[in-house]
Image (tube, rainbow, N blue to C red; front, top):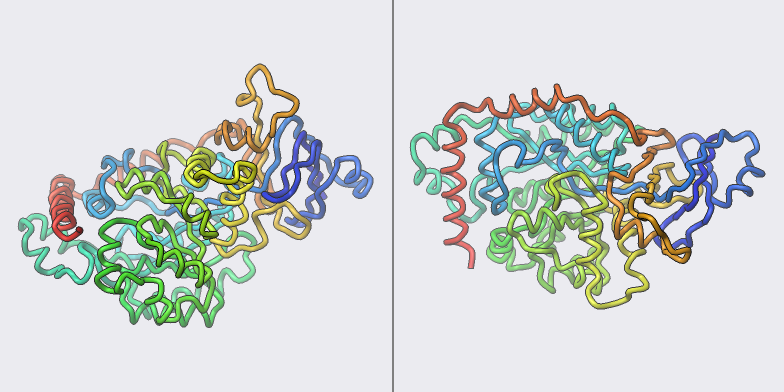
Length: 483
């Protein structure tokens, strides 16, 4: 048994801090939380690790990201509207999914994240299973707890339905059409996707850190027949479903045209909510969508930095909070400061959610967004708080840099952490009772980064220009198509 003691332990959003406090850990789970003296008396043989002047909290949960360890800016293409931004990736080759995901996982651990949801993603190598297994191996090797989504899409690869993709392609130059014609499949056919999920569920049954979920890309990318089949499989196998929802104005237009504005009711009719469901973004939701989300028990994952950087606007978090909608937080590997500094992104989300009410609850609600609600969003109920029986996922933050030369004795340490600390203040990150990061650990080696960046450039000398043409055409299509 290990006993961690610290100046302050904050067990959860709704629990009073302990100053000083301690956490007893055995077999990867929390045995007890309490005063250090009481825990020493209760577990006299425990090996104590005195962390000193730190704040111990439940580990943060990055509830929506894609394992992209290098940002789009690092790979050579800037922020843009979502749909042209996606198209511009066609000008880059495929990096090593294992290396890129490992880099993302290492950065999350360095920033106090102990669990994440790896949403659907494909580098269109033509071997999606190999890509997915590379990501799974990266999370296993780093020890970051991960819910990994098996992705799927079968429509809307360039322009969303009901637009005619053939007509759109015909309007492009022969060179751009050639680039598109040479593209490999991003995902497997539906029957192979479900078979892959069955095989992975069997392989990872009982795994200490890996959970599987279905990851259909989003309503505009997935046909009704596929939604119904995935929903039935999820209900039968007991797996969660996570997808993108109403992220951009163009997706709002699709929802209005295809689903009479009621996309969640449409998905409900296909059986989607017979299993736990979470959805990312929701930025373009209207009042009726919020009502449906509440009725159906949907957990929303907000990605405020990505929403603003990709010209989708700030998410109306204060409105959602006032309505009672459960909201978690993700970085989407496109956070406000272009890093995996989760605390900075959580701060942004917390400020957007404040609105004009309940100042006395704001800090606790922000912590819940990054912990307890995140656990719900990634379908892992035994994380997100420090309580007996929960998995021992925790972070120790050193607020010394944030404190400066003076700290009033009555300073609220949770307020201090949420207002001033960053990922650089992480002293220790523990997942399942194992320390996965300590302050001072060396950074990730540079060689894999160079190899990844080099591979990403191997798409052909004229590929970036052809991808830029496609992105520009998509932008014009959206402007013409979106009110």
